[in-house]
Image 1 (cartoon, rainbow, N blue to C red):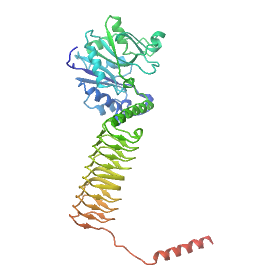
Image 2: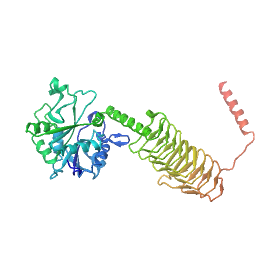
Image 3: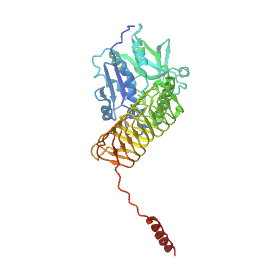
Image 4: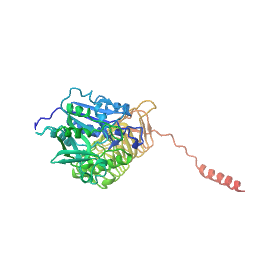
Length: 454
């Protein structure tokens, strides 16, 4: 076997109608951990740097084209006449390609790059099998098709309904995934018939055809049956999410994070956590969150597209939206929302605050109830708050506006003009006092109410 990685191609089948999802969204675009399931698969495939990737589509073609762009060639299967017929639709796109071809499924998203490499590597062994099938051993084989093999060489592929009792006793099942060299793959597919109850052309038939012609076919076994679990319904989608989250939580704790109630924390596919991070119950990480060391995230916080530096503390009940950056030692408290805003080193916004399109300098203090009024109905505008500035409670900063270093904005102010360094800005209406007015009002109202009862 050569140590060099051969140039490979991949065919990803995504032409199924996904009727069990009961959704207008294409099945393979339903997300797991904030990422469409097909993108999980393509990320693993990308580690092998395939020369060509062909995605076979049917219904929902436009959705997949929009998602994938130029990252893959699209082949259309219409009508859908089985998995063998689906793979045949990629033949034109792979014309002239003689290297190994992986056949994958868009709704089987967690096949690892190592497993893909193992399929390709097995093709290059000395016995040079025509086809390498990925088998798996589930806890309950149910009605999966069986792979009857001896010492890794396949003797027969058989559907459960066609299997003998002895064959059903075999626990090695067919995942549907395989690898073959391009010319052999399409040659064998050309010999597959559709003389079955469904009138369809089945991909696994190429193995039995090759064996009948005296050619060798091999099987390798997936390390974990969950790796090849297909997703066809909302229930299976939820189960896949649960498995992914459980594994990610375990890895977070192994890597040095404390999850107070792990089962209540939800990660995204790209969440990055440093060491000695404490995550309290009911925290949700959306895509694009990076958390440095020694950060505390209190309960019921939601983060997305946020960057938290060392020593930051947020929550409880904090919401960080895309573009939120918290510098070293910054603090966001309960019911604070940030969006496209930077909170400087050691700065604080402890409660009931909205910071949108804002830059807050180091050591600044944002009082309770403060908001940056960043939207005028047509455009967003920037609020700049200087180092060590103090913004009093219940203030409205009407962007675009700058608050200088060491400045103070008095509580209850609506600031629409820049505030200079070290300046006090108080923007309040003059208080009107009418002694005794409230007493007279109450007396009059009580008399009216009493008169109404009579």
